[in-house]
Image 1 (spheres, helix red, strand yellow):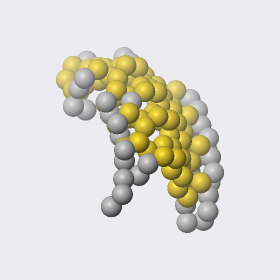
Image 2: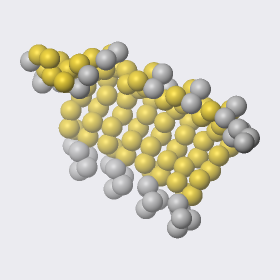
Image 3: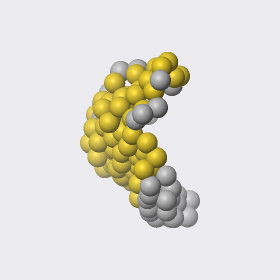
Image 4: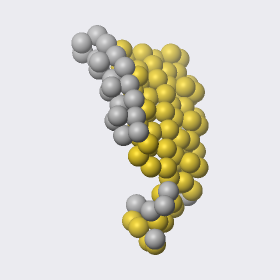
Length: 116
Protein backbone atom coordinates (compact mmCIF):
# COMPACT_ATOMS: atom_id res chain seq x y z
CA UNK A 1 0.00 0.00 0.00
CA UNK A 2 1.39 3.40 -0.99
CA UNK A 3 2.04 6.03 1.68
CA UNK A 4 -0.05 9.18 1.57
CA UNK A 5 1.88 12.11 0.16
CA UNK A 6 0.98 15.74 -0.42
CA UNK A 7 -2.30 17.62 0.09
CA UNK A 8 -5.16 15.64 1.57
CA UNK A 9 -8.86 16.51 1.60
CA UNK A 10 -11.68 14.43 3.08
CA UNK A 11 -15.46 14.88 2.93
CA UNK A 12 -18.48 13.75 4.94
CA UNK A 13 -20.94 11.45 3.12
CA UNK A 14 -23.17 14.50 2.56
CA UNK A 15 -20.36 16.19 0.58
CA UNK A 16 -19.46 18.69 3.29
CA UNK A 17 -15.72 19.23 3.83
CA UNK A 18 -14.45 17.23 6.84
CA UNK A 19 -10.80 18.27 6.85
CA UNK A 20 -7.63 19.06 5.00
CA UNK A 21 -3.91 18.97 5.55
CA UNK A 22 -0.62 17.67 4.18
CA UNK A 23 1.10 14.30 4.38
CA UNK A 24 4.86 13.87 4.04
CA UNK A 25 6.22 10.33 3.84
CA UNK A 26 2.84 8.99 5.03
CA UNK A 27 2.74 11.22 8.13
CA UNK A 28 0.78 14.37 8.95
CA UNK A 29 2.82 17.58 8.79
CA UNK A 30 2.03 21.23 9.33
CA UNK A 31 -1.38 22.84 9.74
CA UNK A 32 -4.53 20.72 9.56
CA UNK A 33 -8.09 22.05 9.59
CA UNK A 34 -11.20 20.03 10.49
CA UNK A 35 -14.87 20.96 10.17
CA UNK A 36 -18.09 19.85 11.81
CA UNK A 37 -20.68 18.28 9.55
CA UNK A 38 -22.64 21.55 9.68
CA UNK A 39 -19.69 23.29 7.97
CA UNK A 40 -18.43 25.20 11.02
CA UNK A 41 -14.78 25.03 12.00
CA UNK A 42 -14.00 22.14 14.38
CA UNK A 43 -10.23 22.41 14.87
CA UNK A 44 -7.06 24.12 13.74
CA UNK A 45 -4.16 21.87 14.68
CA UNK A 46 -0.51 21.43 13.78
CA UNK A 47 1.40 18.21 13.25
CA UNK A 48 5.02 17.18 13.11
CA UNK A 49 5.91 13.63 12.14
CA UNK A 50 2.26 12.51 12.61
CA UNK A 51 2.09 13.90 16.18
CA UNK A 52 0.25 16.96 17.47
CA UNK A 53 2.83 19.71 17.78
CA UNK A 54 2.16 23.41 18.17
CA UNK A 55 -0.95 25.51 18.79
CA UNK A 56 -4.44 24.05 18.63
CA UNK A 57 -7.89 25.60 18.76
CA UNK A 58 -10.94 23.33 19.02
CA UNK A 59 -14.50 24.59 18.50
CA UNK A 60 -18.03 23.49 19.38
CA UNK A 61 -20.42 22.88 16.50
CA UNK A 62 -22.06 26.25 17.28
CA UNK A 63 -18.79 28.04 16.45
CA UNK A 64 -17.77 28.85 20.04
CA UNK A 65 -14.20 28.11 21.09
CA UNK A 66 -14.02 24.91 23.19
CA UNK A 67 -10.32 24.82 24.10
CA UNK A 68 -6.98 26.23 23.07
CA UNK A 69 -3.45 25.38 23.96
CA UNK A 70 -0.14 23.99 22.74
CA UNK A 71 0.87 20.42 21.96
CA UNK A 72 4.43 19.14 22.14
CA UNK A 73 5.09 15.66 20.79
CA UNK A 74 1.35 14.78 21.17
CA UNK A 75 1.28 15.92 24.82
CA UNK A 76 -0.44 19.04 26.13
CA UNK A 77 2.11 21.60 27.31
CA UNK A 78 1.79 24.96 29.02
CA UNK A 79 -1.45 26.85 29.54
CA UNK A 80 -4.69 25.43 28.18
CA UNK A 81 -7.96 27.33 28.36
CA UNK A 82 -11.31 25.51 28.25
CA UNK A 83 -14.66 27.14 27.47
CA UNK A 84 -18.34 26.27 27.86
CA UNK A 85 -20.56 25.94 24.81
CA UNK A 86 -21.95 29.45 25.45
CA UNK A 87 -18.42 30.92 25.18
CA UNK A 88 -17.85 31.55 28.89
CA UNK A 89 -14.52 30.45 30.33
CA UNK A 90 -14.75 27.06 32.04
CA UNK A 91 -11.23 26.76 33.49
CA UNK A 92 -7.54 27.19 32.79
CA UNK A 93 -5.01 24.44 33.30
CA UNK A 94 -1.25 24.35 33.18
CA UNK A 95 0.13 21.12 31.76
CA UNK A 96 3.71 19.96 32.08
CA UNK A 97 4.83 16.38 31.60
CA UNK A 98 2.20 14.24 33.38
CA UNK A 99 1.12 16.98 35.81
CA UNK A 100 -1.95 19.19 35.53
CA UNK A 101 -2.59 22.18 37.76
CA UNK A 102 -6.12 23.58 37.42
CA UNK A 103 -6.70 27.23 38.24
CA UNK A 104 -7.56 27.34 41.94
CA UNK A 105 -8.70 23.72 42.19
CA UNK A 106 -5.62 21.69 43.05
CA UNK A 107 -2.85 19.60 41.58
CA UNK A 108 -3.47 16.57 39.36
CA UNK A 109 -1.29 13.72 38.19
CA UNK A 110 -2.55 11.26 35.59
CA UNK A 111 -5.97 12.94 35.82
CA UNK A 112 -6.28 12.26 39.56
CA UNK A 113 -6.28 15.00 42.18
CA UNK A 114 -3.24 14.69 44.43
CA UNK A 115 -3.56 17.89 46.50
CA UNK A 116 -5.62 21.02 47.06
